[in-house]
Amino acid sequence: MKLSIGEIEEATGAKIIKGGDSKNLYGFSTDTRTIKKGDIYIPLKGESFDGENFISEALNIGASGYFSKDKIIDNAEIIIITEDTKEAYLKLANYYKRKINPYTIAITGSSGKTTVKEMMYSVFKNAGETVKSVLNHNNEIGLCQTLSSLTPETKYLIVEMGMRGMGEIELLSKYSEPDIAVIVNSGSAHIGRLGSLLNIAKAKFEIAKYLKKDGILIAHDNELIKKVNDNKHKTIYFSLEDKNLKIIQITSNSSEFEYKGYKYRLNTSGEHNIQNALSVIEVSLQAGLPYEIIQKGLEEFTPIEKRWDIQEVNGYKLINDSYNSNPESLKAALKTFLSYTPAPKAVILGDMGELGMNEEEYHKEIGDYLDNFECDYILTLGKLAHFINPKKTKANHFSDKKELVNFIKENVKKESTILLKASRFMKFEEIIGELKK
Image 1 (cartoon, one colour):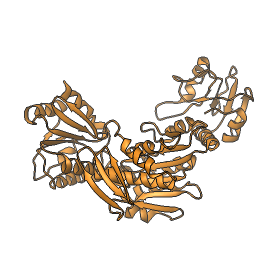
Image 2 (cartoon, helix red, strand yellow; image 1 turned 135 degrees about the vertical axis):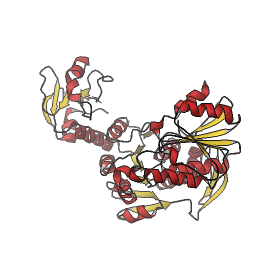
Image 3 (spheres, one colour; image 1 turned 90 degrees about the vertical axis):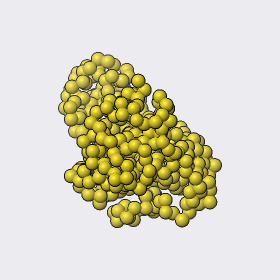
Image 4 (tube, helix red, strand yellow; image 1 turned 60 degrees about the vertical axis):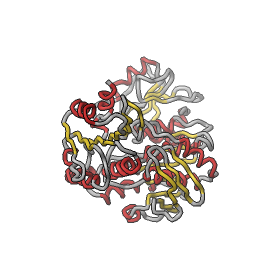
């Protein structure tokens, strides 16, 4: 993203104290570690840092100027005063995005939004130059970084939107102005922060707040989403119960299905991934993409790290799905794994976070859910996972990862397939590391 001083003033409404060269185009940086000579430094403030403390350092490295609330440093070529530097960054990114004007798809959901984003990118990259949110950069700073990476050739933009409270997705919608908004699902993730499933649905629906006038909402066919939908925009609902869907076959590493008369294949397993694919198909159809590009893109999709990541480790087949966990995503993973994976098989389950005052009950529900399936070993790790106590197959509980790994080595047969699922803070990648030793 490069803009002139005039464009910066137009975009932000900030006060230009010193304006540099009006003919130049300037880049921007929020990090002194990556700043380039000539960039304008935008100091951001967080809970444990204040970027304004590094303005002098940015100038010494080679920045041409800076934004600030009130700081004046005479040797700067450019000084821009603004009340809120983060808001200025958002306004700059939005202004630049409007210049490029890509077809914009915004995605949110309690679970699966990153998978849907990657599936979407796998399809749209074959239809034209496409930019997506990198990794899980789904907050306002991540949005600015994504919008800043657009080029004049960018035809499609795919942005992921996360939230931890009310109003956050609305802010992201405001500065991205999507053509299509996607609500992958609305479940219990972050219920500890938002207090109820209805509040979570309301927070997810904020994604439609700043849809373009003729924009389209594509949402999971969920009663709570329908309840909060203000019906100001055309809405298309998708679900596994759709009469146009026919599941042909699901194996431990692939899924085949027919939707609206066309056949598709995924190189990943599970009904939940078929449902994710339905949202991608609906977006693609509304964007005018032909069937061949949609089909090719879905088949080319591969899960990203810690999301159904399959690897062979010392005679075991490990399926690492430990990027995150909540009751809905865990049940979907268990159903897929236990329904379509041949024996011998085992599951390693850890704590699910941010579930509020009913967190014990949510974990007990998982124990009851497991009674619907056959499994050789159920291994649990963590304070809350201790409440996962199925009746059909006794759970073995551990308080230490090395103890758990030793149990696997001594009891779980080689050639077994093992699913690992937990919230990110459980660091289940350490279990895989121990198994590799």
